[in-house]
Amino acid sequence: MAINRDLNASQVSHPQYLPDPRQATSTSRNNKAQEVSNTDMTSGDEGSSIIFLRKIFVFLFYLHLFLVTVLTIFLTVRGMISAANNKHRSFRPREWYSPILASTACGGIVALAWPAIVFRSPSRGIMAVLWLSPLLSLGVAILLIYIGTTGSSVAGALALISAFVQSLYSCWVNPRIEYAARVISISTSSSRASFNYSCMVLLSIAISTLYSSVAIAGIGGARATATRLDFVFIVAIILSFIWTLQVIKNTLQVTVSHIKYYEFAAAIQLDAKEVFLNYTAKNSMGTICFASILVPILTVIRGTARAVSQVSGDVDEFLFSCSSCSSGIASCLVAYGNRWGFLRVGVHNKGIVQASSETWEMFRRAGMEQLINSDLTASICFFCGIAGGAACSLLGGSWAFAMHKTYATEISLYAFLIGYLMSRVTMALLQACISAYYIAYAENPQSQRFDNTIIPAYIQRLQRYGA
Image 1 (cartoon, one colour):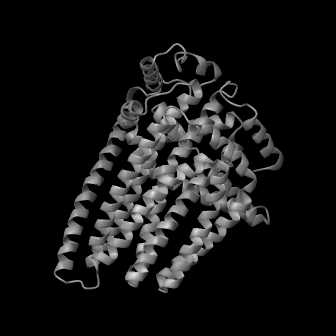
Image 2 (image 1 turned 180 degrees about the horizontal axis):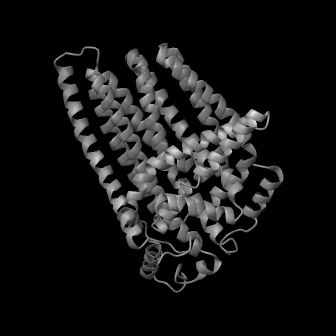
């Protein structure tokens, strides 16, 4: 039978849900953790349908990886043969592959640097991220405009606007940095699993780098012949690349948030390998594959709606109606798919829609909705992604411009996408820690494991001065 949506204070302390760490061995703790997840599995016909859908999405994900790999091999071999036979003299493999592969390596290095920068000194790290991102975006804008083609000029103008908006946002959120730094410091405090977290992040980046290289090989092979069908192949490879790295990111987030949740809720330290194999990989991969499509789409729509709501304000009746409509859309969408739901996907084996809905409702009951809406975690991760992508774009675009100007624009854009997604993969560690901290607090605000002066005081501040 499914348990209630949210554990109240008495449930959290009850050994049926979370065992007392003073009375439990390592094995019994993991067994109890298994019981907690199993109690939330939907039973009956509905449960069978959900399990079937999860298996379908896992099958589709691995099938698409196989098909894209075969396509990439075909395109790469065909491109090499075409280049060797000099049928397409306009494509120079060495001058195309060298900058983009260097940018991929750069993306992996920069991505690994972000957690160290933000976790070691959160306040300085946040400030560095908030100012590096617009500065590097400005550098990319200058590079693209200097390239001089129509496409690069349009992309450069967009990058310039992005840099300006990021600068304004960095100034606007400055009052929130102190609180964000305190929460990051608490939620990412060193634990016995820190080595396991590092290993998971390294493995995630290694896989991301490998798949990036595979995607680059396929795109280069299609670029060698550049037919209309090859353009379709390139789009398919890019979409596959985005979905795959989203799955890697969300898998890391589900696993780490599972571990951190038990650490915050009951001071129980679970084994990272066992959590990944017995929970994430065994039960949650279907939901993760589906959520990796759903959540980014809903996030973009909700973000756009919130931006329209903020800009529209109440200047006149028409703009006020736009603001009200956009605000309603944002409030509705957040319940159907959000990053906070990933914790319940792993811990309670829920689907992403149900997990997101229950988590958001729990935040509302705890009076934390305004706090969650003003949380800077997503912004910090986004700025890290932009900065990482911009750094890769500057490297790849400058190199390509020096070697073969024709390739500079496309390589700059491909490099940006690779750097952005790789940085988002590693920053899933931060999102997982913050999610676990807030959700554990919302379930039991009176727990002695939390400093009860931090979150309530900030909520009062938000209510007094507004977000």
